[in-house]
Image (cartoon, rainbow, N blue to C red; front, side, top):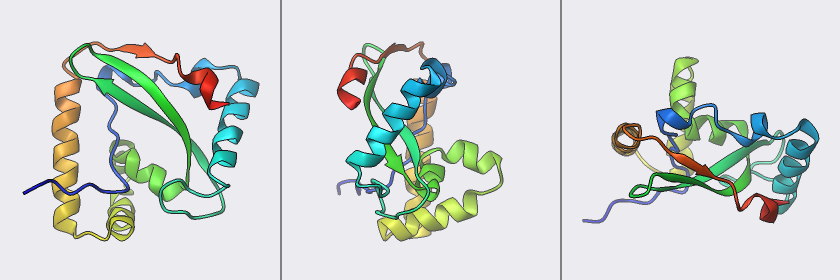
Length: 145
């Protein structure tokens, strides 16, 4: 039986990569240009659920699990609810996991059981990746403006 692929997924960053992000690394005017470009590419809608309104920029990373390279793939526009799901660890620490769980299930058309299975797999992957030091590759950054 194949594993179900969800439109909205958890993206747990390995522990060693926490606080390594574009927003803090780029000068504010450059970050602002980058996030506005992401919003425009998405038609000013959440790239996952399509909601309009307040948007947040989210960095999407690919992980080479053999060479331990974290590579920037994209910066996308997300509504706060989708962003909360993606960063479920931070969301849970803020006491807002029940809202994120409901949003995950609604967007993905899935059950609570499927939510917990997906979260368990994301946590397993996070624990494995957190065993290593990662190199960050942002060479794709110029393509995102």
